Length: 160
Image (cartoon, rainbow, N blue to C red; front, side):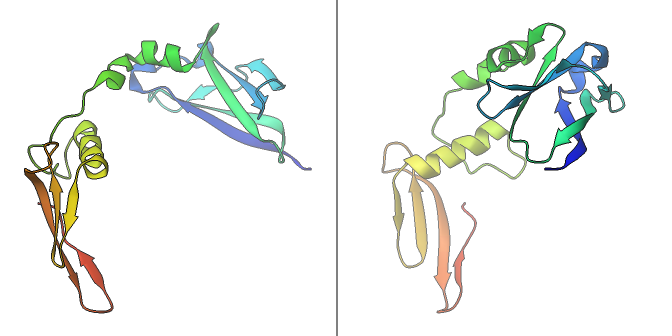
């Protein structure tokens, strides 16, 4: 076992700047019941005005396994409080839908996830040269992709 100083960090986002004095961390073992370092904000500093914070924690056992919980003032940041703090609850109620076109490389994350959902869920057929992805109805083509194989290299073309 060796003892080192380790940097820990938390990115709260650009809307949460200037919180270094209010930001604390607690270090737990993997089982979550053993506190390896009690709640502290020792050394917490913001990197510029980015909402990204760091702290150098000394006396760190290199064999440590566990997790770090960050909290602002006396409020522990749980998944529920994170959702409320950053208003992310709406993302969990976003409804997937049939695609009207293949998402561009600059598409939103929602459209990209929707495309992956369509690829994993909907009917797909494959001939020697073409893969067809269908819409939810199972008959309307949503996308196609060319395929080729010269005996040593298989190539899948872009979906269109």
